[in-house]
Image: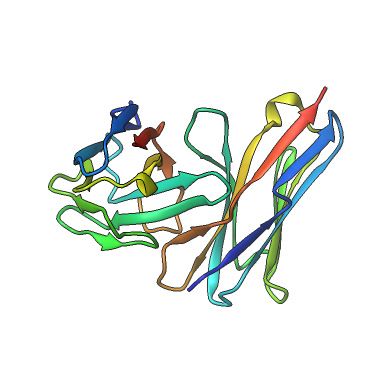
Length: 111
Length: 113
């Protein structure tokens, strides 16, 4: 089945700097890669997703890149703000299997 | 719209007790899911349903049962709780299959002593 590895597990950045979170997946048939943000005491919420037919997608300060050959995808947050502090999860959907999540990255943005 | 709601928000059980967690969604979604979240382990799928009357096993189904008698509700049961089932449980729903946005509930924190 699909296996998703996520790095780093914790990340601290200064406000205004960029943050990058990386994930690798194992199933070459995977075709859907969402990113979820979880704020303290809440359920995860989708912030951006990418499908296997594109290499990059951007939404304001957030971008995701996908390298199918290397089987890795990354989340980029530019001009970080304190409200970006949260736990971020990547996920991958392979073939006929349900979504598999990475273990999460705790991002802290220091004002 | 309330979205996805979960009942109860907190629960403490003794080992061997049983309980049912209730998830309800008002978005007319076909798919529903139950996850557990443990520190450092991310979100792991317990069971899911692709429509009313259907259920399927996820990554960690042992010790849990589910039922989807109505489209809007998805119940998660623990027949004989164990300390290893101490966790935060999240329910989610999606319009289509698992390659669509999942909407999560606020979670239920369960402690088994």
